Length: 72
Image (cartoon, rainbow, N blue to C red; front, side):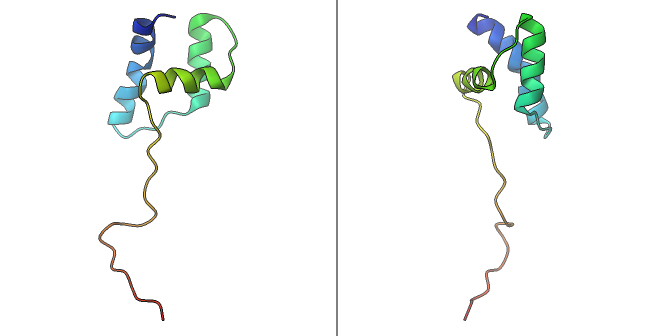
């Protein structure tokens, strides 16, 4: 798959992410395998996403405006 084809492939996932939806590696892997008619290892998908600067954003543990209480 060329770089341009990869961009076209991941575009729907990026659009969904902008809407707040979550895409999993398993979901992306299944669609990728269907598109190329071949079974691939998960690392192929991780490398594809890394090539396109995709990164996992993890929510912070607490709200930033939460008042901190002093522990004694």
